[in-house]
Structures are given as structure tokens and as C-alpha cells.
Image (cartoon, rainbow, N blue to C red; front, top):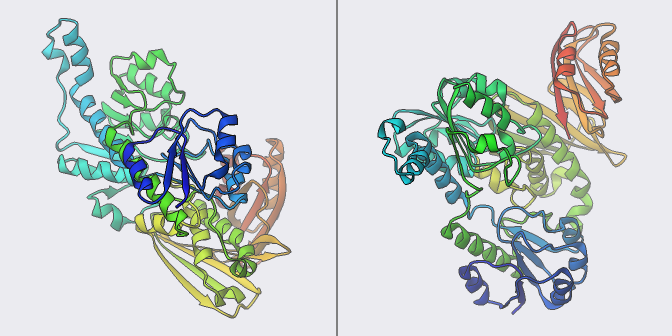
Length: 525
């Protein structure tokens, strides 16, 4: 039996699960020095968000095998230090899914029927029934932005209320959406046709202010908006302006760009419903989170892989010696492909050529998925859970192998199939560096070492490279490298430009306006 320390309060149900197989000590409220002293003999540690598991604490724990976070975020745990010591870090990302979905639906119904406003009025001794006439959700159109775990559960509940469901999520196949009775559409149609809009995407650099002034302006008159996902997804100042103008009929917010929120004008607006980040705050969710993290700990302590491991899993030295150097190639290709692809994602084919094809390439496939899914899901994607997340999203993944490669000792090629066609990228490893060698029909050789990559499809003409360089130079965007692949002289070509600095949308628009440029896309690595 191992010894497990529970350093933050969790539901008793989780403690009971652990106690059936191991010795469990509950010591909450330990100071950093006290935790560092206490951790010496423990194989397992369970925390919530209060206790900080620093590198110093990990260094003082020679027997520690697993750290469990009873919740989602692991910002209070030094993942690098844990991974360096071979300590698994697990969390409980699904325990609060239903709670978040139900809270979203509670906000939507309260918004539709003016429940909080009517309650406040009645408590002040008023009887103003005529002022709180609401709308039914039956036969209304609900636009769901993001069909991950929470968004999918919202869809299931909304369907039972006889709502028409539109969904926007480029990273789920149409079959998965149809199973939820959701019609997949582009963002413009969702904004234009939805009576209610609810947001369920992770907060990333690409989704920050996903709904801003431009999106609000394109919405249906008197739309109602719900955000119980992440505060930064919705531009609060733009929302306030839309409310004041009567463009938006009402909004229900559980999350804010700054918490606690300080925008008093927004909080006190008569058409705003606000709750203090209560999405996961149910008795049942706390129990489920405790049980989920306990079960993850038990798996690790048994020497088995845990589904919700959030740091890199162990790879045997034999496999790592051959395939390890290609993990970065695989994840880089996945990240590039998902940012370059157009249309609705349907399937992925991973092709291995050369010596690597003779091994079990599951770890390379999962590494591709880490790069591909990492930017489009709220969960932390790693080599352990990447395949499961892809399966949950309905992404069909196949592998092909050939021991022979015409041009390289080893080559990894991704074929990402969408509703509009296919995107092909290929890469290899040379001189311990990732090399991007193919983009669709174009062969080239680029080392994607810059933080930003600009992909330009164009017609090969004199002065094209100079035109791009002039625009970046005039806007203080530094170029680190430039590679061109072309089908023929003065024919179709593609250019990969490495950038040391981010390129604003206005500058990207200038590049797209260059004569003979067909498309230009910016990718962040």
C-alpha cells in the first residue's frame, strides 16, 4: 500500500476510493515549508488550486509517483519539474462537464424569461408583470460556438426543448454534429440566424475576443448571448455598447475577462444576468471531480496509463532512440496542417516512409494529434490522451506505412481531409532540425524555427519576394528566412516566410493585395 497525501479539501467520496487501496492522510492548509517537509514519504499527492506544488516541493519528494489535481487547471503545479522527475500529473477535466452545461441552460432560460429582474422587482414590493414578458425557447434557433464536451451536452438539452440547433466548430466532422441534431454552419450564418448564442470554446490567442464589435453587428436583431466558458472570448465593452444600442436584447455571463469583474456599467445593466463563475459549482460536480482524480491516481500507482495525464508519458529507451527525434516533426506538422486547412475537418491519414515505418508508430500518430488538437480543445492534449480526444470528436485517423522513401531516409506525411478537399504537408528530420518539405503539390525545404510562418500561394513573377519584403520592412516585421516551391518557372508557387514578429491583420491584408497573390495565411508555432 502506498501513502497518499491530500493537501486541499476534496469530497469524501474521492477519499473513500483512495482509502480502499492505500493509506490516505488529509492535511489541508499546509504552508510551503510544511508541505515540503511532509511530502517526503508520500507516493501520491492530491491538491486543488490553493496548494502550490513547486519545483522545491517536488525535489523534496523522492517517493512521489503521481500528483492529482482535483479540477482542470494545473497552473499551481510545476509540470516541467514533475516530468523531469518522472512524476505523472493527472487532473479531472470531465467531472464538471454536466454542471457547466446545466448552468449554461439555466442562464439561457433565466435570460429568456427575465427571472432575476422579476425576482428583484418583487422583492422590492413591486408587481410589474407587464414589464417582464419573456420569450419561449421552443422553436428558437440556438447557435452553439464550439462542440466540445460542454457544447455537446448543451446541444443535447436544447434539442429536448425543441430548439433548432446551429453549430460552428471547424474541428468536428459533420457526422458527429448530426448525431447531436446540430447543423454545422459557418460563423457568418450562425451569427445571422441565431436567436440565442452560447460560446463553448477554449481561450487561445486565436479565440481571444472571438465575439467582438464586428460579430455583434452581424447578429440577428434582439439576439441573446450566453457565455459560461471563458471571459476573454467576449469583448465586454463591445457587448455593453450593443446592449445600449438595443442591438443585443440581453446577455448572461458567468465568466469575465477580469475576475472579480470591475466593469460596473456592465454588471448593473438592466439586460445583463451575471453569476460569479458558478459553472462547476455544484455538489455533484465536486463529488465527480474528487472521484475522477482518485481513479486516475489509482491507475498510475498500479503502473497503468491514466487517461487524464497532463504531462508527457514514459517512453521506453528502445522506442525513443528511433522514434523520439521524430516526435517534434510529427507535432509540428499537425500544428501547421490544422492552421492551414480550410473547410470542415473529416479525417486524417498519417503516412510513414523509411526506417520509422518498421516500428510501432502509435506514438508518432499521437504526437501528430497533439499538434493538431492542441489549439482547438480546452483540454491539455498529450501523448496519452490525444487518441482518445480525437475519437471523442469523431475524427477518423488512419496510418499507412512504407519501408522505402524515395527522397529521404524517413518522411512523415499528413493528409488532412475536409469538406473542401485535402491539405497535404510532409516533413523530416535533418541535422537534428525539423524540415518542412512539402505543402500540397509543392516541394521545398524550410526549417520552421521562427515563431510565426507566413504561407503565400502565388504566381511566380519577378519582384514577388521583394514586394513581400518591402511590406514587412515598412511595418517593422523581421523576416528570418524565405523559401519558395514552384511547379514551373513563372507558374504556380508557394512561399514560406519565417517571421520573428507577429504580423497584424492590416499588414497581412497588404500582402494579400499584392498582384498575383492568391492567398496568404499566418501560422503561429
